[in-house]
Length: 457
Ligand SMILES: Cc1cc2nc3c(=O)[nH]c(=O)nc-3n(C[C@H](O)[C@H](O)[C@H](O)COP(=O)(O)OP(=O)(O)OC[C@H]3O[C@@H](n4cnc5c(N)ncnc54)[C@H](O)[C@@H]3O)c2cc1C
Picture (cartoon, rainbow, N blue to C red):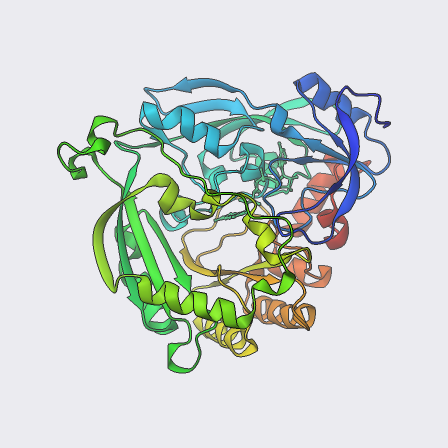
């Protein structure tokens, strides 16, 4: 495809949120379904891949030398069923926009990740999970149906419980381009959260607290200090909560006057020229110490805005630049219940390795989701970020991959930029089904990404 066959297309450098492994692609910005179909039809030998807001950390939404379909121009909210609690929207709509539209009507998105700047297409493509996975499962469980533009140019209506749905939910854009989706929503009485916070002294204390009482909360997550060592290894701040009912708001408060108002705040953007070494072990160690100590030992029922509770990082535009030009790697894995020893061992290894990570979270997943390449399985998931330039990082994470795979666990493809393909089949047992369906649905391999090439998906 040449840059002038479509109205809005130009060659550009594309990266994931971690800003590692940039590659050049023809970025096409369809404004209509017909333009999306034309982009797929004309995308040439290097194929194409859909892209949302580029919040996948690695190379899932890029395609070296081929086409990248930026779907954010298809961003209409078509219909809200305010009585039944469903929304029909384009796949390029962001969760932020959905919150703006839905919260005043008393509805919330069923699952949100740690940023609301993801699209519905990206949420289904990666089958994202939120702090409520132990209760609500992942995003695709709340999809009533979706429309998928496949390699043959057809638009198929895809319903849950079908092989095509299960391949598409978590299928990283490789079954086609999602054009629209109908989602089931979560009712809320207010735009505030009622939040309990507590500190855990070490990893075992943290796991015991999560196991004993997670079921009481719809949302639960723990920030974990991966630089703490010795007896404090794995110390954490546990934050759990639920949507605040109207009755929980103080009488005559501002919140009472507009309980469903969606409020956010935004700080100035991070500059693009930060020195790479800003996040040293010393600065991150200090940050972690302060963060841990400033958290209340125990607090109950504190009211917080939805944006503060779910998306604190969204207040700082381009915070990913804090890692400097070299970018950073997100490493997220899950190991099942009964594999706590593997989790302990990995946390110990990370803290002994002194990885300067200040965004590390531990969560307990609920039931697995039907998507063949969906990430969650019942057990423990740890996510951490590490500057990409850390000496020896590649070999160290390769060793962690082995340990994760050996414990029957897996790494999350939406975060990945470096996994070796040999381990993939052990991590994702339905990989062969996925490959077979893809080969039948897209025999010419129209849909392809850097991630798909690297991992032979
Ligand atoms: C700060 C931060 C916090 C995060 N927290 C979490 C979290 O808590 N839980 C979690 O699960 N994830 C989390 N993520 C990851 C993020 O939710 C996923 O990577 C999500 O897929 C990003 O959506 P996007 O619209 O930016 O998609 P992109 O990053 O642009 O694309 C991601 C994948 O979706 C596919 N895709 C995008 N649009 C379409 C479409 N229309 N049709 C078909 N496929 C499509 C792409 O091909 C690609 O494979 C976080 C990311 C950030 C930056």
